[in-house]
Length: 233
Image 1 (cartoon, rainbow, N blue to C red):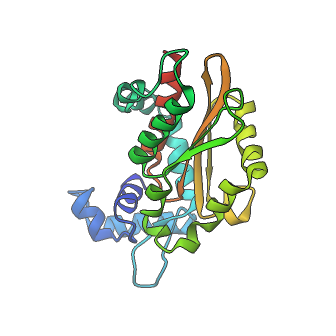
Image 2: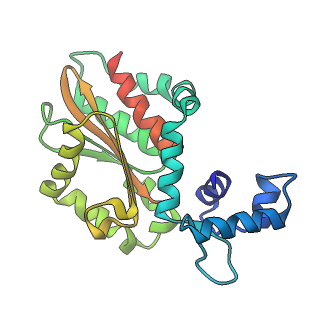
Image 3: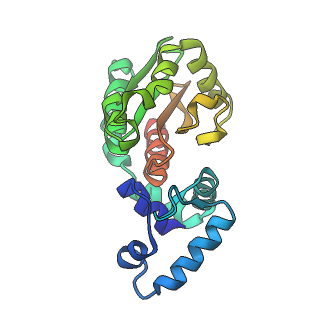
């Protein structure tokens, strides 16, 4: 499942057993991989878009993968060691600096690193929601047709709905990850969100990345966590 998700994140194309063997599972027979894929499909973790194509992860598959990452002690240690934590610290300005500009700079880096839309809501600093990375979002294969990204663009323009979503994150500490159909709004079923509360100069804010359900969850979780850790220093 991890190999299939890694390959699909990288290629955005359905993944077949031969590709998995060639690129990820050397030494495992194609027949064994096909049987495993059939098992995963039977339990709703992957699906076949077309009869003759490979498989793609479902929302259930992504959720299982994300949960396994979050429950893995090794991953929780590794993403701090391998995240862009040190680079992000350069985008966290000292107390008294222009925090709005600092936030904008940090969001630019975050969006470019993850390849998604990056958002921060810091109500004690500004009532507006700062965002960067629409170009990064639109470069994803899913959103090359502008209409596919329209629900998220409309959310950005609807301040009340966006703040209501971010306020849920603000009120409960820890990572908030919504994948596809886990979003309350059915128009956002093609998107995922990784978000967390972050403290800026003793004031609570929210940092979040939005992308396709095919987003690189490892990188998104690591990067959002790095922002939270960066503001602690």
